Image 1 (tube, rainbow, N blue to C red):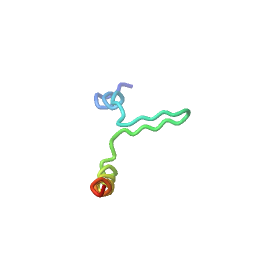
Image 2 (spheres, rainbow, N blue to C red):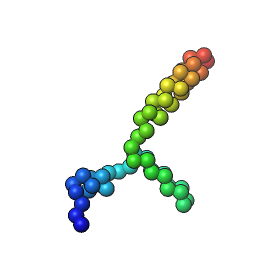
Image 3 (cartoon, one colour):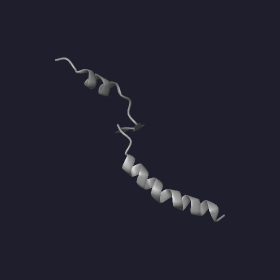
Image 4 (tube, rainbow, N blue to C red):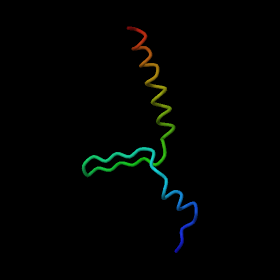
Length: 54
């Protein structure tokens, strides 16, 4: 059975994040944009308040 062009491209794509520690292997294929945005919304003001109050 032959693969389609799209399936070959997906198989060759490198993951966004890959972590291998001992027997644990974590792979994230696509960046979680919503999670990154929420983290920036929460961490940004906290970091700037901490930095600017010194």
